[in-house]
Length: 610
Ligand code: GP9
Ligand code: MN
Image (cartoon, rainbow, N blue to C red; front, side, top):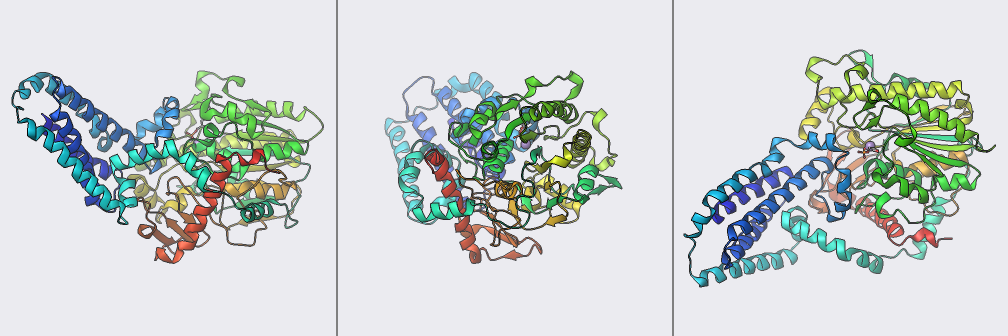
């Protein structure tokens, strides 16, 4: 029976490696898993207990289930999960639809056999035991030999440059390392990484408001920021069989007073939508341990809501879903929002719900009423941060909200569904902007609209193929992570498309320049995309592993195994592959920026910063 489990587990190692796209040092990765399993089963075999078949089955089930969780998580985030995420399991039910999409047979197969093995053990477990009467010596010697082999391999890897690569990819080593980091990393970080005086000064300089193009054009105006769920850049100006996918946004982009940033990227950590919010409002990198709103709920922040409040504004946030989700309700307090209008503040019928929550049309309509209330708080301008929801993965809109004619071949595909969903989101947003105009808010408010993150993954082979076929060019990480940023500035006599590279990290300095307010008590890692003269970079940590970089010219996709030399670099415009070694300085710059920002979060630096 143990032999059967041993064989099955080896098959599962291969499935795990396939699903998690192990690309480097495969033999080492396999051998390590192989010997750890052999060691565990040998230990069980050597025990002198009656129910050892159940112990073996428990081990087998635990490994199978964890592998399954790993590959499902990998399917979405392109990285293995960390134990620190256990605090987030409560959110699983809410994202049920998204998870269902990920449970394909190539992943499910890791656990499908468990009931069969269970039945097999009930029937034959006891019987097999009689045949396992080997000598005591063998029982002891076998685990000891295995342990020696594992120790030997470990020491060899430790002393070679294979260690990082293998430990980032191999099932057991990854989880042991992750648990170790979880318990002792904090101490390590605080003790060993410090921001030097020079670095703090450089950040302080970076954070200052300098007079430049469009500075303070929006001063004294309201600020309405709309974060649109899963709005990518590719649907902008796209026609599907002659049908305009986002007609309202396209029309808006052409109006006077519009700045359209068409090379703008998402920058997420573990908290998806909520990290897009966090990064946008604070110009700090998101945490990679837990959603930033959870891990640093009670830190001191000095982002957009606080800065505007210090300039007389009242700052409210609106989102049509449960207030506890992503820990928003608690986190918003230290983010600086004075009131959070969540699902419970909206009225809706069952018909007015799609997928995740209240449909955008109903949400925006009632939000407008709340905005009137916000406007009447005092004579000063207001700040409204609005987070939409309907265009959420898997984008399955009820028939009554599907307005596009989708060709048979795309019906039911993620692209077909997404086009319908984003078309609906655009329609609802268009109505909202019309209503803002009617109520007189359009002319006295700066309005910023951007997407929180991607909708269709270039890391999923099927989705990548579908998108590449449809778009007619390779759908790669750069197109996947690109979201539009559109800023309407009343009184601005220009219409400009700004195509320099930037990300959500750059939103705060960019909008502060337009609004004309200085960040006096915080630090910002982003750049004002209108005035910054130097070379900007985008340093993602999810979907592309930490250490990846995007600049105006190139994209470095850090290797899955964490070894820089194994990474891929290509020219964004020509797609020509480049020698990654030439770009180490960019990679190091990205790491250093992330680490500095991380230090600020971990030490709650802004609490005592002056
Ligand atoms: C839920 C919404 C969706 O409130 O923000 O979150 P996501 O699943 O995109 O992170
Ligand atoms: Mn989202």
